[in-house]
Image 1 (cartoon, rainbow, N blue to C red):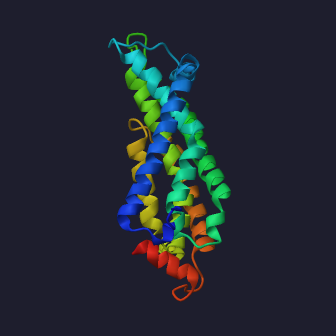
Image 2 (image 1 turned 30 degrees about the vertical axis):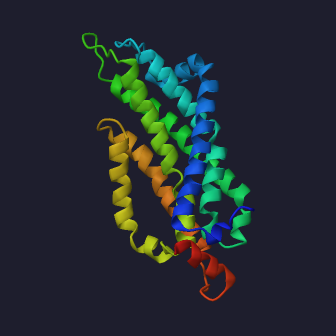
Image 3 (image 1 turned 60 degrees about the vertical axis):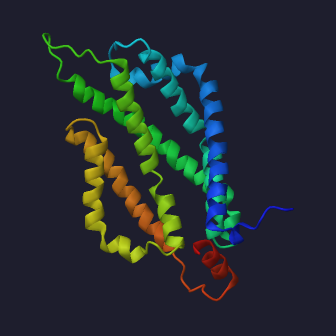
Length: 252
């Protein structure tokens, strides 16, 4: 028996589809993490570079845990195309037939946005760590632990990587008529305030400079998202055509 048409699958069958693709993603991440662990010494040194000083670890397994966490981050970046491919395969039944053929542009765009966000988060570590180091004096020395520093660094780069996916997310929300371009234009003041709130939560400490450094590109991404929404939002109703029928089957 051939594979069932995704447009005709029930809700439970979609959940089963999601579980299967999630397993593929997790297995890929596990294999990637194991492979990256062989280079974890270099990866950890690269992550620690913005710290600008010597760190210590005070728990027996702390250094090992950090090596695994950094290896996982490298695997998440390296296997991003696989992750986004399975994400595309899962959400593609909600799209129009002509849009389902855009798998390669989707994988490329989401991977590029994620990698750009991770790179930007890493770059932000330098001014953030310089700010924290600025409190050192001849009588006051920072003795940072390996675990606390790495936790902060990995959280920052992962969050910025996900935040940079906003244009892609808006594209699909617009295609599904969940978000309209006019809504994004009308709510720009609220969104701008939300961006600075997110920047304040994500960035370490109370460094206003670092918060603005994150909020500025997020604001630019919001403008890009508005343009994307205008390009993606359907101009005509599709309730009576084949594409609309497929979308209704997915929604129902």
